[in-house]
Image 1 (cartoon, rainbow, N blue to C red):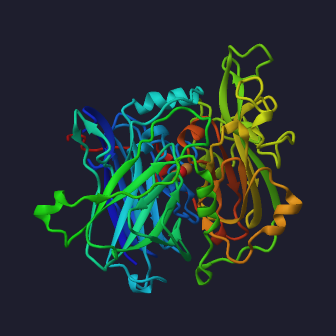
Image 2: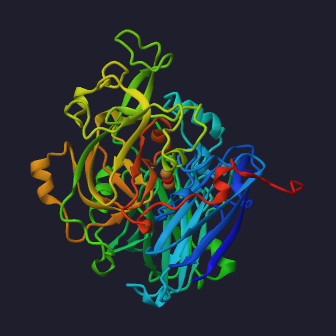
Image 3: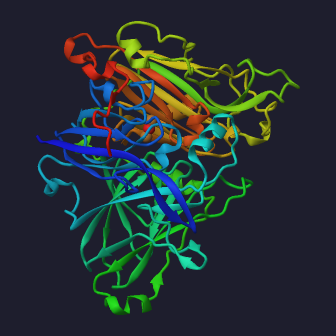
Length: 570
Ligand code: C2O
């Protein structure tokens, strides 16, 4: 096994799109950032040099980090943020996972531009793929282009302002020719293909806000993996991917040589909804046999896109995922030791004193997102990262920790919009409060979680991401979860293993995971605004019975805030 080493220089660079030059925070001057390529079993060392004006951490999204919670990269949960002009080194092994993961800043909206792919090849080489060996592998990162100040945006969201939108969507950082600056078309991403060859697209949704449909005119996809776990191959003409998810798909260049648009269209909650433009981004698949000098004369074929509000397509796409049997590295536990039922909703709290607002007091109230009606909040006064406090057995100073309950304070009709109108009074489930929400698990506990979406979210889906563990997705459904009816439908044979489970719009998803990785792991919605508004909790997994199943002490440099860049000359 090799050690793969990279230096990530985080800095602000100027980029121009849509007639506007913007200062953008990126890694190594590029957007998306560098791709990390490893072979399963390799160690990875990343030196982060922060020359941006922001505090930053980098999270290795989906990397299991077994016994290595210290390197998970979540600010104040696993480490102090890396301050401007400081550096920090991450070290982790990639073991037991093959496929596509990614990395991103875990600080507020920096994730919009600080992200990149993490590709894990199998130990026995790409010939051992359980699908045709591709001629070429290509990361395809769907993102958003923001003309607004992202730091300001994050402050707005944490105060509950909802109506903020990006200026456009991107494929590998390019907006494409549906966007223009005074009539000059924006560049689109171009994938050159050779007729008859096979391509492995490694799709990542790095967007802050939307699920996406992705199509290539005249071509089909064979989905072979998701979240670095092989799935039973299935063929589809449209990929549906939520923020945080990855999908690996085979495309064969078997159409008539020509030019074909690759289109990513954001999915919106069904109408009536907030008025948003479509933000469709177009790239191009170009056959090498098309004579280059005549290329612009060859008309490009556009795919017919699904209706932007067709959230059922997403439901079926995700329902089609199942684990490829021989790749199921751990059996699904036949039963769970603990059962959580978690509503994903909104509530209001008083701005002034953190108390819930009484009727009529809504001048002071603000919107927060919550899980079982508690909104996650880390006090600004917190000085010791949560994991460190946990490891040394002291209560994290100044935090009002509160245990996540097994269920919401009361049952109601979660998904019938008619009962919950959108306004601070009506949507008050119960007084919502803010706290550092935690849930403690004994090592090895098999945990069932049913995530129940609610009408309070206006038909948003919720991509729920758990750090440090993969989850088996046992079932999903629309409407309200009914334990007697729905637990009988659980797939205990070949459920897909995911680090991000998409809870369908106005529906639920049931997952099972084994809490066997000691540490403090964030679980949260991968929509950035839901996260900023508090849809998160910390799962604390206790040490196992032996040294080998317990969290080792932190690397020495972790106890310092982060180290100064010694030679700070640029
Ligand atoms: Cu991809 Cu907690 O994040």
